[in-house]
Amino acid sequence: MNRVPLRALIAAVGLGLVALFVAACGSSDDSTTSSADSTQLTFKLTDDGCDPIKANAPAGPIDFTVENGGTSKYTELEILDGETILGERENIIEGTTGSFSLTLEEGEYAVRCKEEGGEGEATLKVTGQVETNKSPEIDKAIADYRSYLEENTDELTAKTKPFVVAVIAGNIAKAKQLYPEARIPYERIEPVAESFGDLDPRIDARENDVPPSEFGGFHRIEKALWEEESLKGMKPVAEELEANVEELEQKVKGVKLQAVQIANGANELLTEVSTSKITGEEERYSHIDLVDFKANVEGSQVAFEAVAPLMEKTDPKLVKEIEADFEAVYASLKPYETNEWPGFVLYEELNKADTRKLAQGINTLAEKLSLVPAQIAKGEQA
Image (cartoon, rainbow, N blue to C red; front, side, top):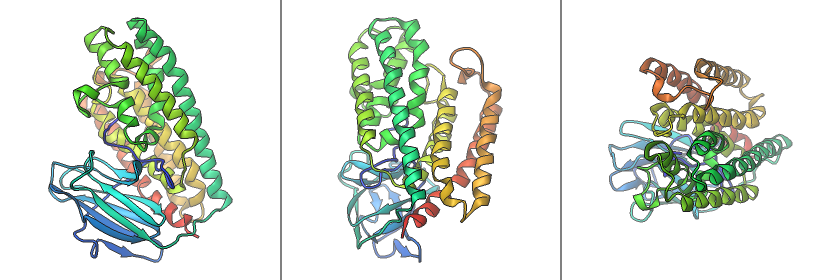
């Protein structure tokens, strides 16, 4: 996981998968412009928080841009409906920008660049009515992706249970063997969990993402297995992990989806690869990062394939290029696959040339995927 950062997929009236990115502005008057198809809204990250503090936009498709105004204090921006994250962009470090798209109905939304909210949290007031396109193609895209989400959360629960049993029994060898199997379905759909408040950090927080007293879930057990080589005291951690995974499974069944958020999710999963897996920091004790890497790419591909038919008439060339780029990424992973646990060489065995090559393929794909959500958002508008 990468979060406390990184979440953006599914949400209330428009749960979101992958948020692409967000950028600058200075006041609610000069931060919003409109085109015939969508509203362009920019935010800036500063030492004080989000700028502007108050923004306005008409209901409908909104293209968000986020830029870092020279702060190292905040590097992400989220759009929330209550505690549900509708869209976000993370890892906006100094000198960089990012973007993502959403279709928003009338209401007031929180704009957050601080994890805890409070001072520095902005608001976005959306006014007017929007009629979304309820075409059979959009309905099918949402239904197909929903099926994928439910399939993977069911698998996540099924794979986590025996892992938890092994942890509670103190069986280190068995728990190590089962650990990668439980990670795969989670990494395919991580943006979903990230949209449900603190559910993602409870399941998947890395040690430096949360206060020491809140460090639990998969990575706390990973540390116990590979670094501490002891499962003493891990029973409550394992039981809580199982409960949180089951909670995720139930929440996904009632999640509301928009096609644009599915498109956002495809890109968010690649962002997870380029900012976390490629550095080796995600699975820092077990070094099974390439297992997560492939699962993220698989989840991104399925999300893209769900919405790709909506672009066949508007930009068939881009669709074919993205499909080819996915195949190129899989090809770049192939040399590192093995027939032994965990299915890939351990990440510590890769050198800088290896990681550079993997990163290049991901960046090429992500650049093209980042163009998709805005097109989908416009297509959702009647």
